[in-house]
Image (cartoon, rainbow, N blue to C red; front, side, top):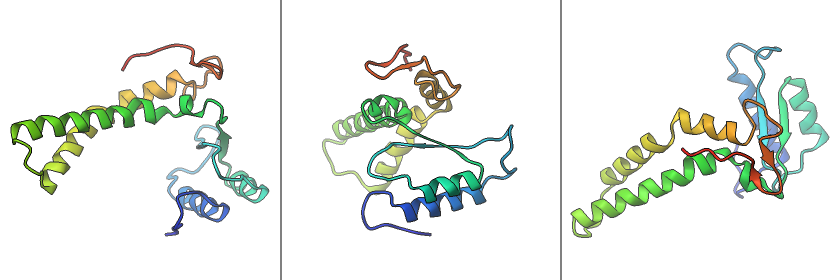
Length: 154
């Protein structure tokens, strides 16, 4: 395992990640079994060395544009934001019931478990990837000036 003391990606770490990822592809890569890296384009220079490694492993890689990157983060909108809202709601409900007694670790785990079950669903994840046109691929799904061209409610 490789770690970085800072909170950003480096060329070395990315190469290690690509190698790690490649080991866990069970049936190999073929024309019918492709794998895609989606990069956010922040603070990481994709070097020729990295591109060479990705190409050698027959992986596909795209970098999302920065101007509207927030609109292209499928899990932030569909899962992480609802998770935070649900988690905070459970905290508030429990704190009112218990008259603001400090929660223990078991209570925290229960809140997280409930919030994950309600928000990190296959339906939410797949719908958000569809809305922004990543999967299935739809280049007309996103207008980079305004965000998703179609609004779907979760």
